[in-house]
Length: 577
Ligand code: PEP
Ligand code: MG
Image 1 (cartoon, rainbow, N blue to C red):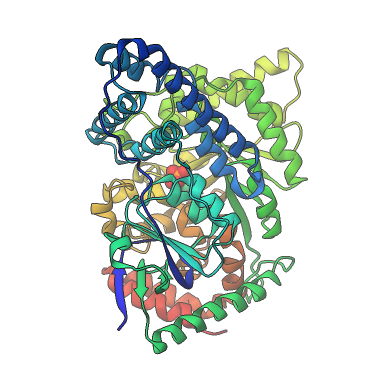
Image 2 (cartoon, rainbow, N blue to C red; image 1 turned 45 degrees about the vertical axis):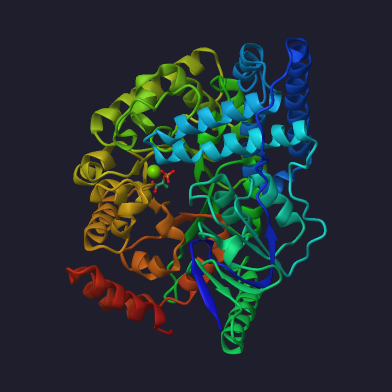
């Protein structure tokens, strides 16, 4: 009989295979007393183990293929940083000295204290980072005990589905390289690094499946449905056949989609549409070019600030943007200035005492409060604009005073560059992200001051419904198709048109095929999204008949209930042209 387990679906793919259970790696440690004479030796053992862990991770970091795994490099950097200096050694060394215990016991106690501190943190993102601490400390403990720290995936094959208590980001990469079909984990939230990485690498995965490794036995037949978050155990022939057909259809669809790469993106009545990519590092560019994207619509520069203790210098910014310009080979690049705060924090910023970081000093507010953060980035973007088609975009403008202040800073930096005879594009386009209802209500004034707009629906929805976008308990209110959001989108697009400035949409909604026709119907002609979604969205646009959808859009905009909108969207999306 088929048995279904539920969890959180991570990437919307399907996999069929045999279960391979990986037992937990957390080593069990007994308290062991040592003599006073053994203390120096125990401290040496601890330091040596920390160094070995550091070397292992450095070696893994240097063997990473940055084209597919730039995210992993960032995660490993964070783990390496924990093993640098005395962060993990100072307290255990004191414990060894004061309590005469083994290095293993001292480190394990330190780990438990740190975990307790993480558990009391209010911010769910920070709380979920305790997994990183556990993973790094477990690695060191394994070394002290002479055990293997990473799972060995070499003996596995592409029909195996890993079932584990938890997997590290490094395990996830190894699984991807060895071609394992999918994975199921018992722990881990949708914000864990492992989940983020699985999504980017396109590994079908369901996480948070309680007791999975007890309920699933070795070698049993499994189906992973990453779209619904279901794990089907011992499926009957009928279900198996259904999913085999889904797999086959997905493969054929991808082959068809790849044929669209060099075909222009336009609706049936000839309306050209630009499809741009959202990227974080220069390693994302080959994938973006392969998808036929028109350029970068959103470069999230936060990556430059993370996993480090000091702020990036102007030179570091400049070199980074130059690398993008070179890789893009003439395609446009929209650089978003720093959007830190809320769930994206960095070493320089202490958010732990802020009661509501999403409503606090984030994005442009943070930049305007700290010239050291903002001015080097502005200068670097200006300098980079001399080398290619660069636009400067500012996140989360909420008041026109913020726009005036930013423009003043940009003009100030332009004068400085002019005095030093440093080249830059004097007519560089300056745009703003529209992410708060206040910005929409004052958009006429925004549009008079800005060269372009980009709609950040992830935040616009968060701030419109007063829901924290990382809080799972209010996720049910996160609805891009809600009448309130549609009214806001309509206002933004029509105001931009009235002022003859371009408007793009770069929130997750842009890459969701469910909303493509709706957005076209609202007049959107510029989308920016995850590079993996570009061809799917292009195929939807190219088969959209603008005339057929027009009356449907009008009906959608008249609805008061989201459920009615859902039904109309479904029927509009099924319409053949
Ligand atoms: C958005 O808010 O829609 C957006 C694209 O920005 P981010 O997700 O980086 O906040
Ligand atoms: Mg945003």
